[in-house]
Image (tube, one colour):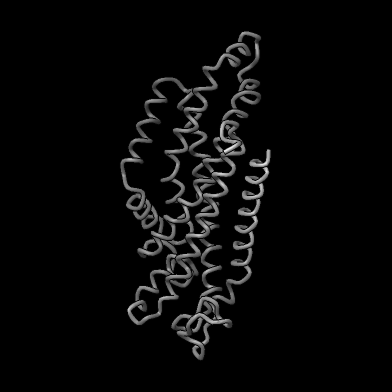
Length: 271
């Protein structure tokens, strides 16, 4: 019980921190865009904890705004991708051999192409920008979760209590609501949470390469890309602090996902 409480506290703390970062980035975006040439290229100090860039913009504000943008894309992309996985995974498990073979072939096809390459192609074809990246991430991150959903649905479908429910005359809708959804939902939620760090990292990578968000929009990928031009001049803070902040957000999502997995899995509850 003590371990479960500790895990719950960790999950809630990670979620609260992520919400605070997102809200702070949203409210501070206008300030992050303001330039002050009189304060350009300043090293980290009490006045500017993350320093300033070549236009005098506060790097802490830019980092928070960029993280907020990345988290927003991650929410949209992971939500859509998880719905695709739920639909396709359920259809593969319940739709018969031909449907299962077709969806399995689609999974192998998408997983056979590197994520970044496929994401760049989709984002570029859709004109880049927020929605180009969001759609690209969404349609490239469903295969792994689809396999998990398919396996869970097949396991429930072939279980003894579902067979008993059928013999008792229960309708398919009743079986789905009272047996399949409760069994699949925990793994689905964990998979959804663990999609966030992948989505955020891939969004930052595509934007860093110049195929994602526009340069005028605050984003971690853009900040890191711009910092490459000034690292040789000794302006290390332009890349170090935004990179560490991105890593911290990804670790918070991973921490929350691992915690939820422990909470919903009785076998791991006391780890």
